[in-house]
Length: 267
Image 1 (cartoon, rainbow, N blue to C red):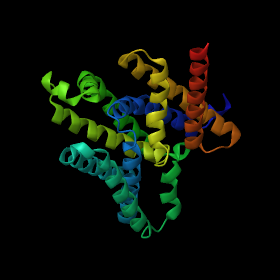
Image 2: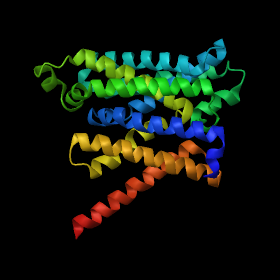
Image 3: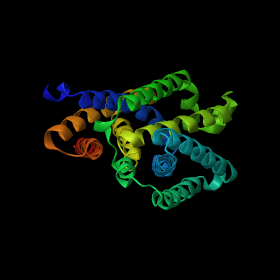
Image 4: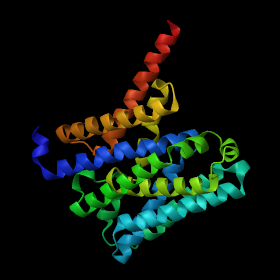
C-alpha cells in the first residue's frame, strides 16, 4: 500500500495498533467499575503535565505520566475517603487538572506544541517517542496479563474479591498506575480529548457482542485494532485528523450494532 512507503505512517500504525491493544484492556476494568469518566479526568490532567514539561524543557510525555500517576493516586485516595460519593473524585480531579492546565498553558512559549496534545499527533511522533510508547505498552500489557484474574475480581465486586483473598489495595494501586500511564501515553498520540473515547467505545461495542468477560476483553481489543486501522487509513486518504477519525469509526460501529440488535429483538 502507498501509505506504508512513508516512515511516519509505519510508526503511526505500530503505535496505533499497540495502543489499540492496550487501551481496551484497561477500559474493560474501568467500565465494569463504573468509572468511565476517569479517562477524561486523567487526560485533562495530563495536559497540566505537558505544560510543566514544555515550561521546564523536559520530555512532556514523561511529565504527563508523572502528573497522571499522582492525579490517579489522589483520585483513589478521595474515593476511599468518600466511598458513598466515589464519583466525586473524578469531578474534583478533572476540575483541578483543567484549572492547572489553563494556568500553566499561559507560560508555554510554543503553544502549537501544547495544542498538538489536545487532538494528538500520531503521524508525527519521533523515533524516541516510538520506543517510549512501545516500552510502556508492552509493560502495561504484561502486567494486565499477570494480574488478569485479580483485575477481573475487583472490577466486579471489591468486597467479594477481598473475601476471596485478593489483595484489593495492592491491585487497585496497580490498576491506578496502569490507567494513568496508559492515558498519558495515549494523550500524546491520539489526543487528550479523545483518550476516554478510545477507552470506552470499543468496550461498549464488545459488551453488546460478547457473552463473557474473557470474550468481551478479546472482542474489545480486536475491535479497537480494526477501528485504529480503518481510522488511520481513512485519515491518510481523506486528509482527516487521525484521532477524531478513529473514534468516529468506533462510534458509527456502535450505533450500527445497537440498531441491528434492536431490530433483531423486535422481530
